[in-house]
Image (tube, rainbow, N blue to C red; front, side, top):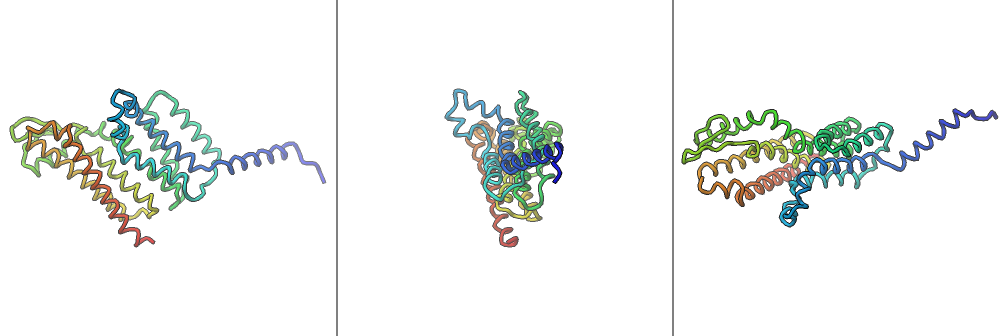
Length: 289
């Protein structure tokens, strides 16, 4: 029998090495950890406040990170670590993961924010339908809403969005409005800035419903779209109610704008969105099983 050539031996050893690496590392758990790290790195300014003098207050406020985002991060880890076996990593994954880690190490938070949706789209492209890889990618893409798509949209079209909300508020309450400014019952002007807009909460509502759906392993169908639409409408109604209260009770402005009253409305949005998500899941689950 002829002796094997040097190139054949080299190719065989390379294939054996790749198999060993592939068998040792699965793609989805690595990407799950990467998604969580990217998100926390994107929100690092809020986390950094934990190390200020108000540590107890910031701990109570979940380190300045919305509860829905924490839930989505939990879902990504759950999908990434606890379920069906994932495909082994290949050299494309090695390049993507290496570049992602290098970008995260750069002292520019915007890079991590932009990388989150890009990486989610890459996962969706590499995954197949109804797998945990696909579900994790969907949650990660929805997570990029509060981190990337929402702020970017507000930066580009924030004034137009607040003008629409002001017109809606005026139509419902009969309070006079011009542009993104409306007048309370005393005739004082109130400006609806991006921080008062319901758009940021819309992205969170989308994230919460989507995360519920993927965690339950349901198909992405019209029922999901309907639940998201209901959650978005609920958020807009609750935020508009808060703005109306500011217009009708100007003497309680501080209470409803920055005080406990604002917290009431924020929790109302969270509870309403969670209820809509759970109702949608409970109706869709028997039909899909």
